[in-house]
Image (cartoon, rainbow, N blue to C red; front, side, top):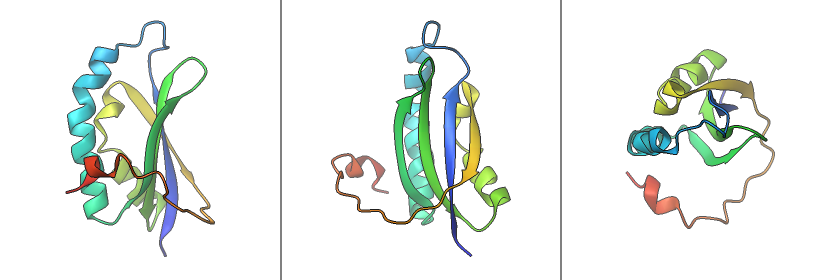
Length: 107
């Protein structure tokens, strides 16, 4: 059964010492990873943001099992400078009305 998992990424370094340069160096590989998830039909949604003192992001992944979700989430290059927690995420309704960045994910 298809389930949705929230892959919540959090930088290892707090904002005060976080290297934006190191983050940006990984963005091209991050886009490749996201495009791969989308091509497989696994990407539900993604976005960046942060915690009160750390950079972060959220990727919603469709997977059959928690193990598959972990395997998929292990592919993000952002884990080199942070870590990802995986949670089963109940999605009841999604209406993707903000599509201005969709072109970045076209395979």
